[in-house]
Length: 56
Image (tube, rainbow, N blue to C red; front, side):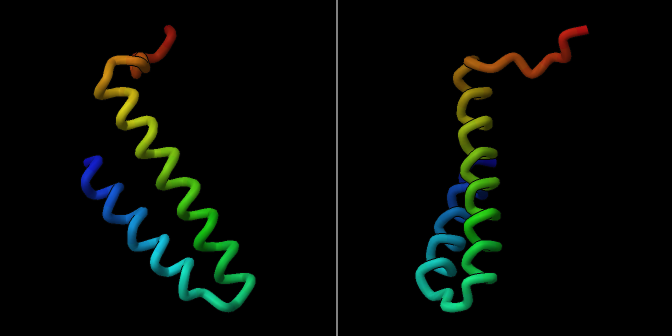
């Protein structure tokens, strides 16, 4: 899963470098932020730093 997220982040970074329209840039930046957060969570889960069980 992390490989897919890393590839998605690289693709979004490439799109961001080529984006000219401000609306498109904001949209790509939002998608990039979300993908980076997902990757950070996936890594934290793999390392056991995050408990994925519900609190109840």
